[in-house]
Image 1 (cartoon, one colour):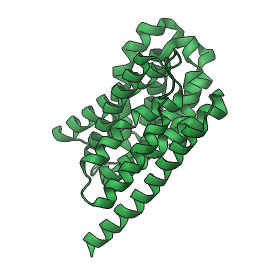
Image 2 (cartoon, one colour):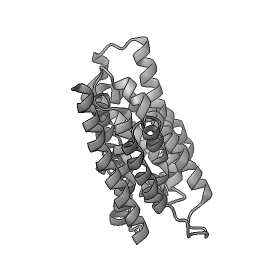
Image 3 (cartoon, rainbow, N blue to C red):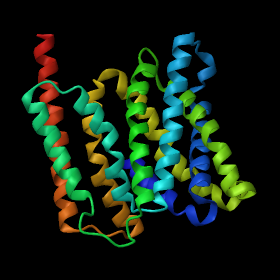
Length: 272
């Protein structure tokens, strides 16, 4: 999550040069090249069911990135991630069974509500940005579910194939947005940093983690994303954080920690 949000802040610096579509294409394409060279997925044989899972996983990843970066053109990073969190939250809510689970989810929802700019009615928050961030959230839910299926019995090479699929989806949008500007060598250092921080490293870590935990637990753990996004936006992009937003981030972080401990105990109880 730290890598992802730091990379997202750097990516926003690319927008004046290549636009949101161009930044998405650069991020995913460079990340795919790095992951494919490192993990060499051609050494592994996948059956038809595994390929289907990988394509769904990569498709969700590509759409998630396109929607999210498009949202960043209209709204601040912290708010975009808070709205995008509706996806993981839906995954968490879908699997909830015990009363304590609902308490942590309710706390996360309260924190999420505090992050929204209810008092703002001006042009700072564009409705289009909100819609795009919510679409990214729906894709994020698919990323969690399909990523768990694709990663079962696999490894980091699955992340390489998934990011490669996402890059193929994003590349036409990047070319349409930025054209030959994508080939400017001056963009390479920043674009490579974005690719490593936002895609190559976190997606590889996700693919290692997802098969070893319930998708519901992974979804609730992702509740730390809005807080880290707001912090990254403040430090790198100088986007301000108000006291209400700080309270929301604290509530979401507490819900994440509490849910982790609760679900871990439930798993131990089931194993016993």
